[in-house]
Image 1 (cartoon, rainbow, N blue to C red):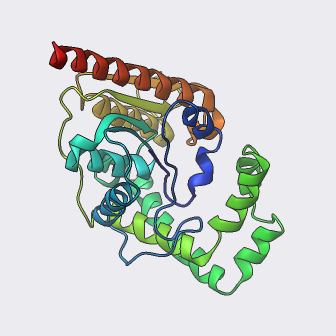
Image 2 (cartoon, rainbow, N blue to C red):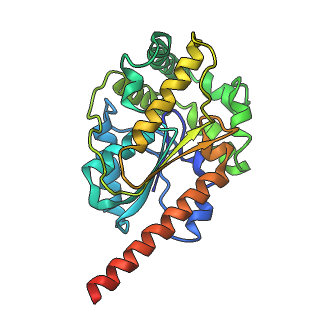
Length: 282
């Protein structure tokens, strides 16, 4: 089960899920408002997003438990889902996942201000999209900075993400989700997972600052590393994997790493299930 981050769509998984789909049932979907999914009721709180996923799992009859893979804000939702429905989740993969510390005083003030600025920018982009200008620019690939990212995807996914990301519905969903996250409107995951297999994937390798007075960027990197360690400590059966040379979208920049980790967790959970079956049978 793949849960995308805020402001994108399920196309970000297209370099990963086909390999996993060769081995097991795989679900890639767009949350309400994203991609080509219909908009959902506002505000888009963490509770609504988690319950939408639960209803989708039940409606489709997805075999449970499954491995839940969440990126960025989707990782935050994945933690909450695993906490709320532990019987559904066999293992958890958090890819550069958002953490509640990012919206609290543990991060440098400029970083917190940037979080709030992101909400306003999503809102501005939503209004521009409603005029038709933003989709028109996207159709012509005239959105600065986005083309380099989209070009890493297969052609069909590249075309789809250009079409979907800059629609008003998508930007409205992103604005609402991120506003709820920053404002802590909705539930925040609080539980540990005991012995749930957990992989925490962090973009880039943290290297401590050599200066006694680190820059703001170095302080942000240190705090992001700290949140990754906190997520690793949520389970006794966890690993922290730092991915050198990757940006925030590890599944796009280094898909082989994500594929390898999910495959190993799939092997582990299958082995545990077989062992449990043998024990019960004996």
